[in-house]
Structures are given as C-alpha cells and as structure tokens.
Image (cartoon, rainbow, N blue to C red; front, top):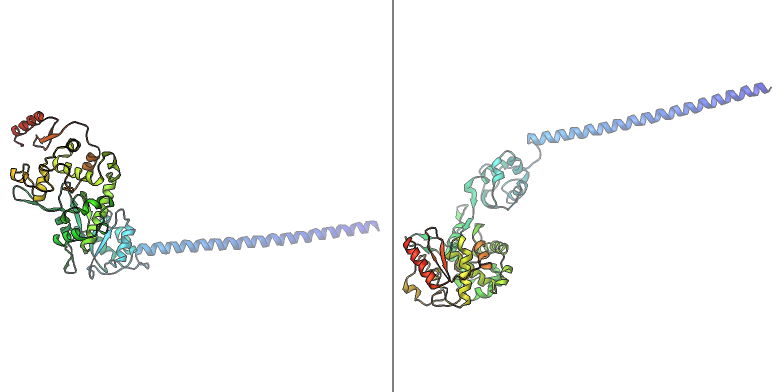
Length: 406
C-alpha cells in the first residue's frame, strides 16, 4: 500500500513539473514573439526615416522642393536694399525677400551656393529689382553698377568746396554727400542738392540732426552754414539714396559719433583742460597744418601759444572762410578782421575748420612734449621744422626758402 502511494506521488510530481515547464516554455515563446515584433517595428521605423531623409535630400538637391522662387531675370521695379555689416548669406536673403527682390530667402541662399562672388559682397546699399529668381538676384547683387550710396571723406576735407591755386576745385563734405545720395530708381533721380543739404544743416534741430550734447552749445553760436564742420569724421560711409536731407545728415552724424567715441571723444579730452569741442577745434588745426608725422608737435605748438597767450597765426584759418587753399596767404587777407583770423585774434577759431581724423584727435589729446611755439614746412614731403625761439624759427624759414618750399 505504501509503495502504491509513493508511486502515485512521484507521478503527480512529474506531471506538475511538466506543467510548469510547459508554462515556462510558452512564456518564453511569447517573449520571443514580442521581441521580434518590437525589433521589426524599430527596423521599419528606421527604414522609413532613412527613406524620408534620402527623399528630402534628393528633392532639395534636385531643386524640386517647396522653396518659393520667382522665375524672372529682369525684375519689375527698382528698389534699394541694404547689406548690413557682417550679414550672412542667409541674412542677406532674408532682407532681399523682405524687399520682394526674391520670393524667399532660401531661393537666394541656394543660388549663392554656386556663386562665389556673393561671399565678397560688401556692406552698403544696392539697387536691386523686385521679383527676381534667386540666381538672378545673386548675379545682380555682385554687379559693380548695383552698388549705390558710397561716400568717402578724407582728413582735412572742409564742408564747402575749396579752390586750389591751379584752378582745380576740391569737393567739400556737402558736395560729396550730395553726390552719394544719387541713384536712378525707376527713371527718377534721388539726388539731393548741396543747397538742400545746407538748408537742413543750417535750420535743423541740433538734437534731431544727431549733434552730440557736448558740442551743442558751441554749435548754437556758430554760423549756420558751419554748424557741422569737423563733426563728420574721415572714412567710408554708406548713404541710402532716397532719404530726406535731415535723414541723410542724421545717419552720417550717428556713424561719425561712433567713430569719435572710438577715438576718445569726449571722455579722453578731460586731462587737457579744454572742452571736447575745443579739442576738436585744435585737432582740426593740426589736421590742416601738418602731415601725420608732425601732428603731435603741431598740437604742442597750439597749446604752448594758447598758454602764453599769443596768436596762433595759422594760414589755414585765413584760408578757411575764403574756401581756398594757399601755402602762403596775402598780407591783405591776414589783415582782414573775422572770427577765423588767428593773426588778429588770440585763442581758437569758433568751429573746427575741417574733417578730423582719429590720429589728429589723439595728437590733440596727447601732444608731444616740447617748448616749440614756431614751425614752418621745410621739406618737399611736407615735414615741418620746429623752434622755441624767433631766431631758431628764422633759421628754419631760411632753410625752407633754400629748399624751395617756402
């Protein structure tokens, strides 16, 4: 009996083990099936993504994507577009799209990828045409004739034109600005005349024009036609054709003030004991009287003469209101009273007398040490000889005459 019961128990145990094994096997099979399904889904998803990427790339390379692009190569109307300093190709494309030159910035970017000249486009204003294809816009933008509004002012340039002894005329700042405003847009000229610019300069509100606060009191006392003398620094500017005279002048002054700040105006002038505007006047005298190598010494002569005090006796200040350029002025001109006559008047002129470079400003702020109160051009390259006494100066004059300079 006991043997039968034992046999029965063993059979039941084997049956239970078999059932558990079958159940575990079925569970393992289910897990394997789930794993295969998940793996298949992942693989399918990856294949779909890869196929989509291949399709998108092929579509873009083939140029048959949904990038908006005009088909025109001649355009419909003229428009002025600005390329900002440091603008990327994409940013240029965005600006062209905003002006409706191209249908989309992407169309321009795509065309620029095969036009190496686009990378050489300089900041400034360009006359473009509306509704151009991206390729046509890239070609037009890189054409020299499209560039408009370029303005270059050299150190020592006066507001008004200056007559040279040989009869030639050197355009002044106002004439140069007037020329820079010119463009032909849809058959209409955008040119502002010099007279229109002078009127805006003379009658415009100082703050609205962009005259800095440190210069406004002195500018208020200046002759209206000379209000902006010395406030537009030398350099290259971009002028937008089509703007009003006040807008053009304000933009120029805004750019110039950034350059003046970089040159130390007005903060660096404090140690001199003179106002920023007076330092600007001194810098303009230095600019007109000397070559760069002598700027620091001429600035020292100015300060030494002002300290004595004694008249500056600069021929450049005699020439200034006469709008001419002479190495030597006449006795009659030097005897004619006026606010710019530094032979008859002690002190500085009421305004600067020319566009002032950063180098001249630095010389006026940090003049070279010395006791000179005289100088004369004594070499054909424009170099001056400096002296502390009248006797030394007379010897330098004789030297200059012997060299045929004076």
